[in-house]
Length: 349
Image (tube, rainbow, N blue to C red):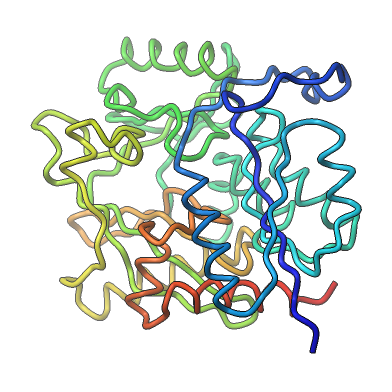
């Protein structure tokens, strides 16, 4: 059998892009949407190097391919000789709503690739649509409203405290200590901030006080829910909302980052653990996630489970929650990467 050629596909953040060539048709985002400045969410270099090393160790033939927002990189992707694309892209030309378009482009090329398809990437990114789907499937999620510049297109009868965030961002972009509000004045100010800073509808969601639980899932036909991981927010400074904002997740120099750690959950009873895993699996299937994913949940002091969001193609660095869960399940890092490759490659075209 020939060695499988696996190309690791990644994008450059806008602040790392080279000077663009004059291509006005690519510089204009679709439907008049302005390109937002991309907020760095993680260390993509570290992640892709670890995956490259794992693929080499497994006997595959890995290579890199970068999408930098120019025609040439798309054209060369169409001509690449890869047997499989390991898709790590999260944006295109500085627009992080375009990840679904990259997946669609790979499908048009009939190039097998890892992770979520265009449907999953779209459904999971638009948090309001995802929550409506959760409601349909009787998956508990916080009540919410969506507001954009004076227009409300969906609203439950919600009550304070509320958490306000962009409707279509990931990586905790737009979430900080000011996101949780308890008055109409603060609510209106935060909505205005989301509109102005992100040119995005604001998701107004009931704030659920409770434990932050992550369920990593691996598989397609018979997905495996890996051991649960908790992001312990209990040591955040007094008066700080217990939320996983960007400072908690990515800004290593902050007190919030230093005081919060993720670790396997060890103190939940079997019934609660099973309920969390069942709900996570239902959410994974409802949004058509595939190969691997992560479902973020809140467990309150009454034992109620709320799905906050679903993450197709979550971060795969060895220090991230997905790899942490895989390790707890008995997978080495290389074995987890190998499982993802085989799931994607064996999927019918």
